[in-house]
Length: 319
Ligand code: SF4
Ligand code: SF4
Ligand code: FES
Image 1 (cartoon, rainbow, N blue to C red):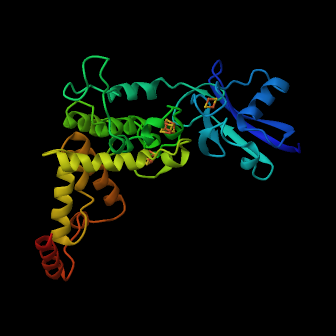
Image 2: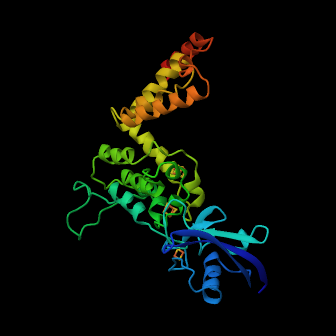
């Protein structure tokens, strides 16, 4: 087996001194190692104090998620040689969780957010029998709607890569919202759909910035970003007066009136709470600082707006 030489740059954390620092390890190892095997080599041969989590070594337990060359993933699934750039591989703890020591992070805040969305089936007595001798049947086509999402191993790679959490630590997180999606789609779930949707709305479906990084990080190919879009759609289609319905109504009204989206007022109208007002006030400050006068905060109708409105009405009639 071929051996290769490179530098492993590891971001370590010392809790006694509350200090993070980078440490370089020069290694000469077989080119077949996974990142986890590389860390084990360093721990065995170079520095026994290096701390990281791992268990199954087979991408099943979800313990070894970390950031490798700026991308979160499972250390046991990623080949080290694929990540060497100019003779260096960079390894650090998941960015949105606090380190406990070296590459080990405190997962509790993410699990606390998971608990908030009630991540369990509330069996519908009309569908789920109350005795264990009768099967609770799910049709293959029903299961296909959330089959992929059941593969989640709670590794938190998506959470560690989520841009919405970096900007707003209160945001629930991708795998938590995927869990809401999974139960919204489950035909055996007896919780009122509006209650599930409220849990999703209260915990951030509208805060997701659709950067798709959760999908890029997920070792199981789960696209939480898509699940969040689907939850928004369900919220709009099933709700009467929620963020989704207010957002859709205002969006259509302003596009019809001006031909453009009123991004200044949209969050405040959709959220209809103090948070929405705060966003509007912050936008007003931002616009003023950039020299935009108040009458230009909202879009003005463009020149041929009447033609555009006629076209929209025609399309509406054809629908
Ligand atoms: S798409 Fe949304 S949930 Fe996924 S990483 Fe980006 S902000 Fe987070
Ligand atoms: S969705 Fe994917 S990345 Fe996120 S916790 Fe589940 S398995 Fe890990
Ligand atoms: S050690 Fe279990 S997923 Fe990597």
